[in-house]
Length: 234
Figure 1 (spheres, rainbow, N blue to C red):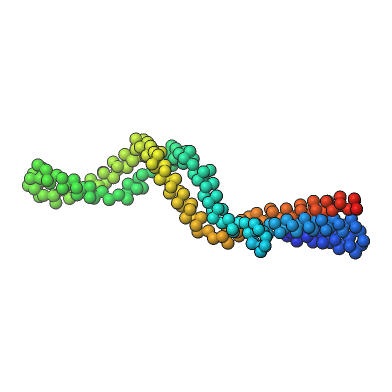
Figure 2: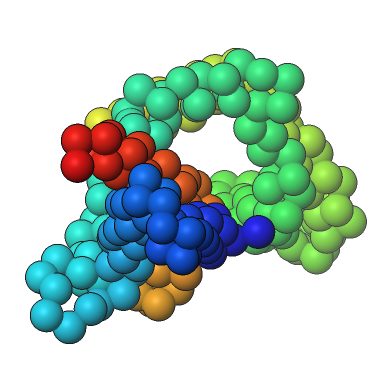
């Protein structure tokens, strides 16, 4: 059940019973409880909606840009710090699932490498000798074995500790770290720019309104207690 409706309903019930039953204590307690609950309920409403004549109302939509900037700052300063990025890279490079270059290497076309090698040989002092045995066409059967062997060799090099350490050092360099942070910040900014004031209001409202509802409940409770205390001195 809606906390606002329940609290205000109980307060109005106390007012009615106190008024018609001529019970001053209940009547005053109901008045104070209702005033406390309705005031807190209005305060919650004013967080999300602009109320004409009430300065400061609609604070969440009104401070939308500051809200986005605060999220971006929090994420960059709390989550994507140089220390956290460095720790992530260390864990990734040292884990069993460290950067695997084999899938990348398998997509590389090594055919131009063989063509370049043949071109260099043909223009060297061995060019005349190769021409005697059929020219560069005679080397064509060697192309596929060369490509496969080159791919295997490059894959082995890519898996070596030397290459992994070199990649790690490159990732940890100042320029690289700045680039990584800059790219992360751009992604966060882009995603935040996709948010609209209405969407942010609905997200925040849905997330915290049920918890803020207890403000209405306690406003009614403490208002009622103040009313009881006040009635004893009347």
